[in-house]
Image (cartoon, rainbow, N blue to C red):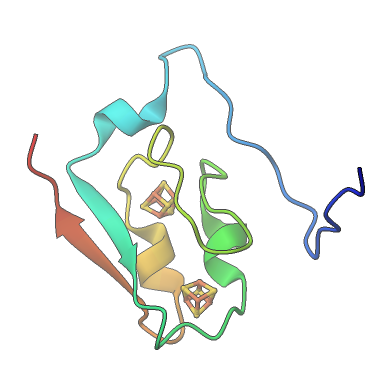
Length: 84
Ligand code: SF4
Ligand code: SF4
């Protein structure tokens, strides 16, 4: 099977000493696909490596810090409060 070629050298999210960081979250990021220009900055800035090249957030590891939303030059990411 042919492996998908990656554009970016990315880390993979892993479980740390305090477990999966997704349990810390109060807000979660939501990407507006119409505004996103696929620049990849959110992927590079995410401290948990929780964003894929396709801007899919891995909610097992996204801790809701909002760095991706803050760094997005197109303001394409909105942080929305989670109901649990
Ligand atoms: S930083 Fe913003 S514009 Fe760039 S890929 Fe991420 S969501 Fe899209
Ligand atoms: S809010 Fe954004 S930058 Fe922070 S952990 Fe989640 S996906 Fe990564």
